Length: 47
Image 1 (cartoon, rainbow, N blue to C red):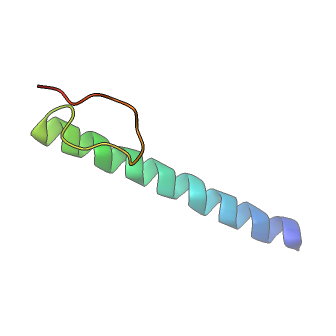
Image 2: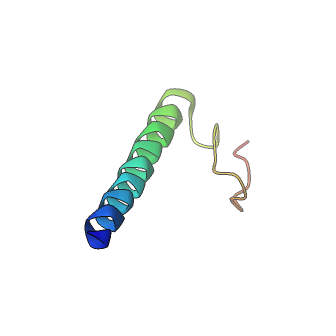
């Protein structure tokens, strides 16, 4: 029983990660690279 519950939580985390990646890529396509980034990402802004 515990394994089934663990698997559901893991699947939700994967789904959340995929949804976040899709949203970030959609924003980058609409507004350009560097318009949004993950908190703590060590990338320089595009000028």
